[in-house]
Length: 287
Image (cartoon, rainbow, N blue to C red; front, side):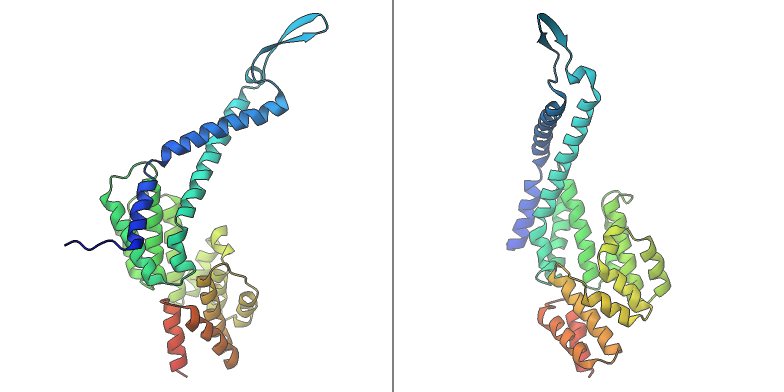
């Protein structure tokens, strides 16, 4: 007998099913946005169609903005398409939130790896239609990330090099590979390589100040790292566990055992299946 799917696997199946027919809906969104943009333009430029107007005793034919400013029609179309795609993108990212929270809020990279791994293997079985291709790409990205956060860097590299399905010139692929490059350089204590990568990093990477802290640690600038970490307000439990782990390491090196213990206690309490929790346990045992 075939094993029944877990609740999370059922949600993965529903996710793919949901986005199969969403392309038609996004086209309807585009049409709605198109007419809304035409209404907004008409508020400023008047009637879009040519029409009769009366001036004193004379009847005159007044051209509408469709004939006098046809470029506005093209602009309305471009804005409508942009808004429709933005709506779809936000909806899709929202539909991934439940899966991402396994890592970001529950700090369970092991389950996250299992879920995203199923998402990739299930997607490979489908003849992807509509926005299912985008769902599959996002699932592959998250699977590669899941391997990274489980400290399986070689497996993540192999997946990206040999098993990734899709254009490797696309931004989603390049950013995922770049993320892995940074993680590898940090894990190998390669300060020169890390600095070279960090200097090329885009805004999204530099916005996550933990990457900047890694740079400081590789340069042995522990006091500066503490300043950044103490004032860094993170949005997820996962990043907070990493923040406290790095703080604990810094305080330990700087000789403040009490503060280091407080930080590592937080990692033990909330780290769940994170490698950081295992490292914190080893840190206490090595005392």
